[in-house]
Image (cartoon, rainbow over the protein chains, first blue to last red):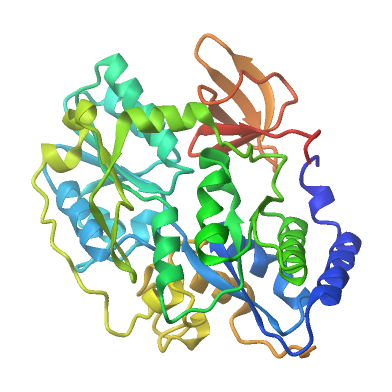
Length: 371
Length: 55
């Protein structure tokens, strides 16, 4: 299959692993953060970490869209879902994210009309099929997903679908990265940049990382060879004392991004002053809300929501996992009280969550030979 | 996903994923694709056309 088979070639993978081995400095420990949950999933699905020397450590970042949604936002969604005459729609993994008193899936079991959709456009179709009911879409995700929501809202406006609205929990990737770089808990040597977010925003927004913090960034694709090559490129920069943004995923990511997508987002969204992230707390200008031009399609204005901040369960250490401070298996409830079937924390819910990736593909710490 | 056919009037593309399952993708955010083109589709919307030349 074009664009897939050639990036899963085992012989090429071993060759790049050999290149990585030749680039590491003996005795030095390298910490490289993969920002995106899609990368975390691929790393454990394909065993990429098994090909790395032990002194190259992959640290998992905050780029899983479901994982960063705080409990209070889930409670807001559930409150709307329980209103009479509401059809509440969301992506599949969002249905299992725990709020303070259960998940949307449990709300559905209790009688709320909650429906899983593949796209916000599906939610709009449901609204057109049910003109006597209010249809609400729970919009989550980074800049990869936000254009889809924006396009749907533009279409709702153009087609005069007045019974459709959206609870907007979209987030942006740069502010949490800056927060992580400012954190004293974490020392990183470089970043594997989020390829799908960069498809929309381009590689330019990541230039602050080398410019302000002196760390290399390589925007990478999601196949095993993409990830291995991006690690080799980061180590190459470090060995040559270079520090810049490189684009390994050129077959998809234009350096300037998708201008049409950025334009539609600019029209429909504006930045919130603050947004709460699970485990990371409130981060300035990191969340999106609907612009004034689309305010009538904003479910948070159309309906009354609790809007209460809810603390994470004490047993759950998703916050430390999302910040890359601990590995999933270091959490007290990993794989025992918290499993993909009965998740306590969000990182165990989505396939892009670090805990789910470890549980499904790795589970335990692995001994590797130190170079 | 690989484009099987397009509906330029509605801005839609019928695509097949790696397993052969068929999906409809909105194409408003990319240049109108043609059959055989490969799209990166996210939440039902194509956000990029893959380019063999720049791989």
